[in-house]
Image 1 (tube, helix red, strand yellow):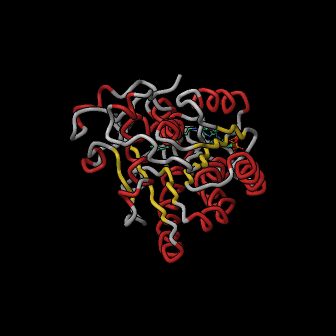
Image 2: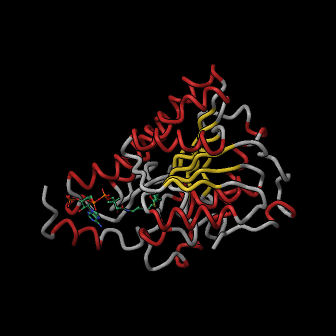
Length: 290
Ligand code: HXC
């Protein structure tokens, strides 16, 4: 089921057809965060192509998102692993063949699970860094020709957990720190050719796959510790996305837009409620193979 509906256009902050004639290419577009980003772009006039590893999930998401606006086209690109730049290049080729162009890129495909250092194998660390960081690089690599031609813009989906130390998230923190560095350097390299690069760093957003992995018991208990006293919604991420791709942000590049209600400023990441009890047990137990 889609998260947004037509009231996003009729009653929201954004004007209809804001992205008419534009095309957004989204990795992880069938997941929760990137899916709502795609929904917002499509509702506001864009066509989209979504890349995913799972065929059924990606096909269903594309169909659902396309149903949000009459006349829109949302192309499903399943069986693509962002760790493989050739698969991404093929997906870009199909997108251009079907939709004519790519203006915007959302590099959002990510992998995550909770594991302390003792239970994190070298291969597990490598898997997450490869999906999140190398996958982000590969996505831009595959889209570069289109971005250059159309003076496009990129949004990387980052996080806040590398701003401080978050237990059980060594792999993701390292990967997302790299994503921020990648975005900053691209902003500087691509600025002169009219291509912008920014990150969105979501905080605790309710109803997302990430949060169900990171806080399986739910996030109600952390609400009062969030300065704005509520959890984020997927629409908060949609709105940040629209802003960064819209002409309102045409002078914004190399930025990280943190959408977390002020959470990271109080430096108690979600999931660290019982620190260090669980962590001590995990580090004392037998670990993963090397
Ligand atoms: C320890 C684990 C593990 C766990 C997997 N591994 N899960 N180690 N604890 N819970 C290890 C495996 O044992 C293996 O290492 C290595 O990781 C690779 O796993 P594979 O299953 O072989 O395949 P791969 O396709 O590489 O796996 C990708 C994955 C997986 C990331 C590990 O979890 C995945 O595909 N997830 C689906 C996508 C996803 O996570 N979406 C959520 C995104 S939300 P060994 O040594 O045994 O070979 C998100 C939010 C981030 O990213 C922001 C936070 C605020």
